[in-house]
Image 1 (tube, rainbow, N blue to C red):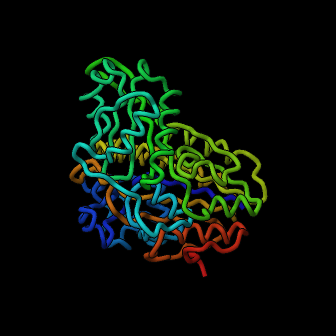
Image 2 (tube, one colour; image 1 turned 135 degrees about the horizontal axis):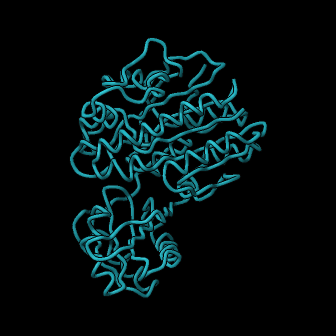
Image 3 (spheres, rainbow, N blue to C red; image 1 turned 90 degrees about the horizontal axis):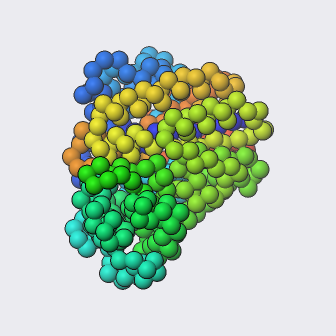
Length: 392
């Protein structure tokens, strides 16, 4: 049996009941995209039951409405952990529920503690600039020239628990930037900072462009993950895209750091053409929806990106065998019509497709970890600590 889990990064489907705690009341990534983009959308996801998932969240997806009999079993999942970031969401999808949130920092200068910045500068032999919350594209436009003159990396954060480091390739090579990030990762652990992110950029003044050499340096997962459990049970585990970074390569038989959705989807398609072992998990993150379109508040680009994923899902559905599992889900929201540029605290859809399993209404789930619990059982690895099986 093979399980393929596609995480459409930030494809939330309606504000969680506690969204007001995060300033995200009324957010709805999928719903608001459908509201502002006319016409029919995402036919494969519609047939699987994306509109039915939206109905569980209490609303309608214009152009991707509920169908009478969806092809997939359908649920929406609430995040039990505090937070709304990539690491928290993926860890909970993999069965780890955080008992306390990662640390976040004030938006204004100076965002990070003075001793963290002092130790970081001393270790890398460079001063830093920035040290506040900002949009990545905006801060390199603002500080890129100063960075080129001084050689000081640009350090910044967001509403998420991140320590981001931007550097121009002519001043700090990508390899050196990664080494700097490894230093930062060591220093950030005591502060419970979820991710250190390398943000290389190139170009001239006024025309700076971030490259695809971004890399995330996460904390070690705080408990046994689905990947750990499966790997220990002899199941082949394959990460595609950011998965290896998010889980620090732990519990992975193979890890492919493909950049961009098209390359990640190409990788999944190639993996599906292989002869699979007795049991296998393919776990893929599709980041463009979040990184390129959600944070930059571009609903048209977001809709088109989901359309490209949708066309591949139709192919994957035809490529899998009768007992194979195809799951489509998300890790948080990033409503491109919402105020600000940050993630939004939302339910995520869960579409579980198997040819040999009759579709079911799986309702509203109280944790993302129900997914990990179910996959672990289906692939013969036993029970996880958290979550309930989707199927009785």
